Length: 397
Image 1: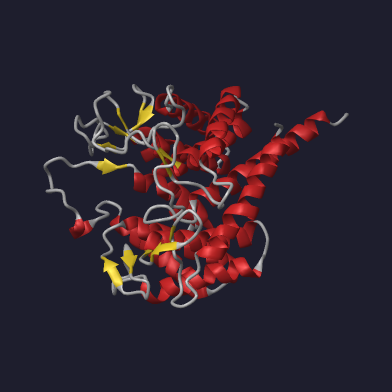
Image 2: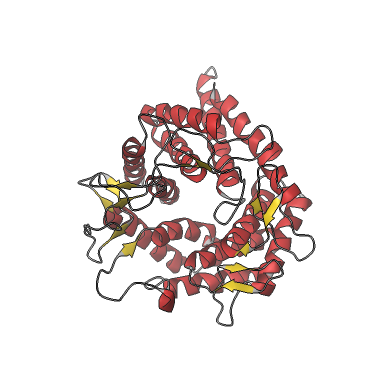
């Protein structure tokens, strides 16, 4: 397959399969917002509404409206979710709940800062689509609330006893690397630059451990390895996703050395996390080779594979490293063989180690309308750039 053929495949799967699945099955036309707990053929099997998945879906349809085509149905879909969130999503202090009932009653308190991260992302993208100042205000105020909470994200909801084994977690610094670019036009320029520099430093100098060539999921406050379950944990997908965030930041800043470093780390993580026996990328590993705490360690997850594809394509686009292209073809072949469901649309989320679907669901508490459509869009866009470059290089001079 040529670049153009791959680009067509990713585009068609996004626009003719995945997005229609969510458009048809996800909207709650009675109470607003979205159903995300959808079985294989789109039937709703639970009506609880998880804030971060509601926000991710708002972002997805607003992004498609802004970047692909100004379809009114996409904008209406985004606004439907946003209005439900605006009415029900926050507590009196502006913190976003984790989950609600179908009608919008709070179920789980705002212990999880990632609800806030994706709320800021959603309302920022929707402001770009609508110019609605209320959406801008929600996005900006939420972003500043995230920064206020970042040193103690769970606050009084944390289970850990303070001071015994303090650990820094990778997820929030990683997400901020992407979120700050999403919201750049809404934020103070100096705040953007400071957040970018802090994010790059934290991801690439603190959580990245050069001796292992890997990114740790949790480290001590001093940036050292903690010889514990949490401290030895490797989540290859998280690191691989973060590397395309960093490549985007490096591209913005024209930092070719940082792009190369991110590409090299991505390849190292992939080589480490790849299952040589059955194919696919492990979910969790222990850096010392001990049994991981997570019983689902050997599962193959949808988001890990599509995020890896994005990093490999961006690495190839920016550096021309043939290892990125060879790995792309390998990960692509595994992904398209196992995850998409040609009979009912969308992708399976959870496979066993052998590559067979563990659950028939297309959405649930953790999987929604986000990683697959975002990944398909990012991959399609990058492959188009590669195809255009190839076409230009073959034209007679």
